[in-house]
Image 1 (cartoon, one colour):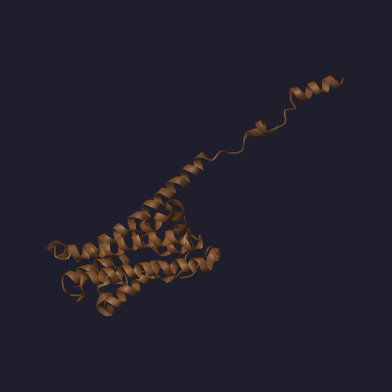
Image 2 (cartoon, rainbow, N blue to C red; image 1 turned 60 degrees about the vertical axis):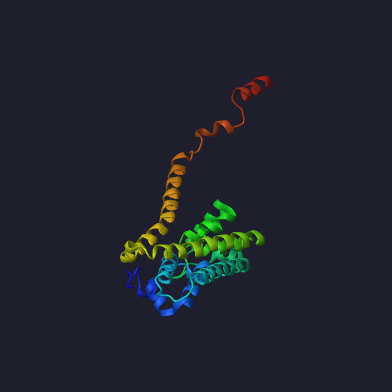
Length: 239
């Protein structure tokens, strides 16, 4: 099966699976789930392709085993990110930008975490880039560990097993199998939708705040001591 290379060949799911097999899939899922360097890896399209290859017998592994291992890799990846965040702490927000690290990615994940709380660990699984940094931010924020584990397992299961099973269930559909390139492009575009929505929402909010932000009160009348008539009365009273 030749899929469309969505970027460099080494990021193409079909190439990655053909070259590294299931072990490669698990390493990538682990890295993208919580390592700083994993944010650019193709998580969604990789899992979809993995499920499709299993159901078409091009990846000779039982589906239940593949799903179980993917979920385990996803949960352990988030766990690593959380522990890294706890160890690094607030210094992560002071780290300078580099080719593989952008401060804005941490800030986006932080805003996402602050907005949705613990359930962000589930929602972030379906948002590229954010899913890499959210467990790290949870560690920095010292989120209750028991809550983290609970939401981590739920999110890892829904995403890891869910996307893989989606690929497996659609793998025998003739239209999907014949148009796998278009399907992978669609998955990538769908994955980007939440980011685009959040960006537009933040931009709109910033514009509204800029318009609604009041200017300085003219003359500061309300805050002045009432020395007008009362002041004059005071002076007249002394005369």
